[in-house]
Structure formats: structure tokens, C-alpha cells
Length: 425
Image 1 (cartoon, rainbow, N blue to C red):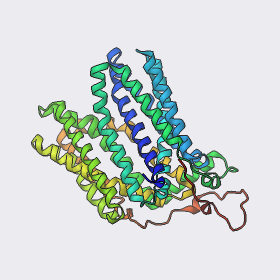
Image 2 (image 1 turned 180 degrees about the vertical axis):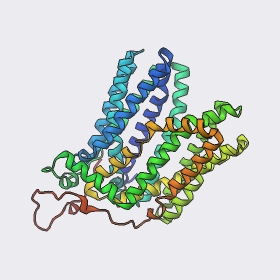
Image 3 (image 1 turned 135 degrees about the horizontal axis):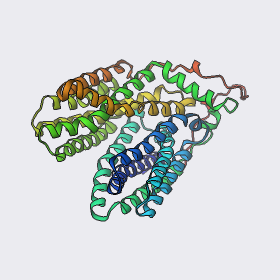
Image 4 (image 1 turned 180 degrees about the horizontal axis):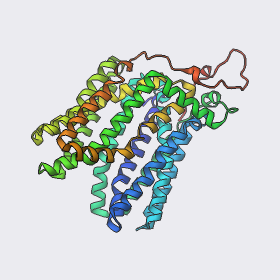
């Protein structure tokens, strides 16, 4: 591996390790709660994890533009490792400790995840690679962690119980923290910040850029709707469809695993193709075969083998369109506001999740399962087509005029863009 690739490799492995740790927690913690408590308590612990994640990620933007993001990523993962290690050492922790530890994990992971998104464009440039390739490699890391994490968690829990699973999650967070700490970004962030403006004014500057810039606004709205629909599909509609049609949970697991595995393969292909893949065409092809098809095939009540094949094809589309989408966000976001833009887009993407379950169950009650599936499929198609014409390799210029002008003195003839990142490992 050449020296230029080391920061990118460190970030990708750190990202994969932290995500794998969270996937272990997604199975181990509910299993631990249900074995000693109730479903209501499990839902409460899950809320304690997700709510601080969204809030802290949304508020962390100005901090990411003041402090080197690698430090925030390393610190967040280290705090998560300590919180999970506390649970593992407790054996059978009481409910209050579970709630507190998961709240700490969520609050630390929100800024850490946003920091890794902020770092990715810079380490990709340092590796002398196109933006699309860096984003595709990040998708590979994410999908691999999401595919392998739950499977490893299930195996460990069945063989050794939840304690060793929690220790492994803590170890993965520690490794992710150590790797992120080795990525060093010099000068640019400090020069780009506005130390004489209040934190709220800096946060509001990011909000105005996100909502005034057309590509960012369109992508954010699409994320809100599709994440809400995906949550309702995975949590409620797929299990309900399987039960009403006499299928087992094994089929649901195979469907999701086929999609995850195919997404890893297609993201690797997208990384290899890089800029040779037309961004808008890749986005359109990817979202059409990966979004509404997964829902409509259930409404058509196809045989299980056909459904698994459709989900595998949907995974191929997911691995193709996600890099194109993220590369567009990275190009549109102004460098001096990148932390705020990435953090806000990520946080806003999840604001519909608390209502997803309620909306889905209301729809099923009103128009029954088949009608809900058709409605979800059509809504998904409309949502992904909404930002399509904004996904381009030469996006519209961001609304930098929305940024409050910093009052700090600069040397004549220099700007924040004149200070370039330097990387060392």
C-alpha cells in the first residue's frame, strides 16, 4: 500500500469496525433486555440510543468545522468502547445502566459518524482518487459491516451469551478509535471556522445552506421519505407479509442478506469504475431497481425464489446509486461548511423514523397490507425520482451567500481555501 492510500484505508477500516460494533449491539442489547425484561423496556432502551444519536449529530456541525474531524471520530468511538465495556463487565446490568450506556453510545456515535463522512472527501483526495471511488469504497465498508455484523452477533450470542458479544463490540470501537486517531488533518479546519460568531449562528449558517441549495435540499427531502419508508418496510411490512403468507423468519433474513451481499459486490464494481460511471444514469438505474421493486414484488405475492432474486438485484442497485448520491453531496457542500452540511443532512435523514412505525400500522389498518405495499412502492418511486436531475458530476453552485461573513482578520490575499490539507499516518 502506498503512503498516499494509508489515510483512506485507515478511515475505511475504522468506519467498518465501528459499524460492525453497532450491528453487534443492535442484536445483543435487545436480546439482553428481553431475556430479563419486557418488549416495552427493549423499545425504551432503543429510543435511548437513537434519540441522542440524531440530536448530537445535528448539533455537532460547527464543532466539526472547528476541530479536526479525526479527533472527534476517535473520541466518539473511544467513549462508545468505554460505555459498552461497562455493560459487558456488569454481566446482567440493570435497566437504568442499559439506558444510560446506550444513550452515551448514541450521543458519542452521532458526531463520530458525521466526522468520518466529513473526512472521506479529503482522504480520497489525499489518495489521489476520484470522489466517486472513495464514496463507493465507503459503501463497501458499510454494507460489509451491516451484512456480517448481525450474523456474527447471532452466532456469538448462541454460543457464549451476550457478555462476550459486548466485549467484541467494545474491542471493535477501540480499534476504530485508534485508526481514526492516526489520520491527521492540518490547518484547514481551524482557518475555515468563525471563532467570533456564536455556535448557534454557525449552526444556522449550515441550516440555511442545506435548505437554500437545491441539490442538498432535494437529496435531504428524499432521504427523509425513503428512510421512513424503509423503516416501515423492514420493521413492520416484511414480518407481517411473511406471517400472513405462511413464510418463516428465515425467508425474511435471506431477503435482507441477499440485498446486503449484492450491495457489497456492486459497490466494489462502482469503486473500480470510478468516474467512468455516469453519475446521473447510475443514480437513476440504481434507485429504480433497488427501491420500489423490493416493495412491489411483495404486493405481487411472487414465489420466494423470485423475491430473493429481486432483493439481490435491489442490492446491486443500492451499491451503485449510494456512491453517486454521496459524491454529489461532497461536491456541493462548501469546504468551510462541510462539517455542518454533512451532520445536518445525516441527522435530518432520520427525523421521520419515530413516526414510521405509527404511519405504517395506520396504513395497514386503513387499506390492508396489499394496498399499503402498493402505496409504499409508488411513494418510494416518487421520492427517489425527485432529486434525479440534481445528481450530476458538475452540480449547481452552493449558496455560500447564506454564510455569515466572519469578522476575524485574514492576511491580505488569502482565503480559507488557500490552506490545503496535509495528511500523515
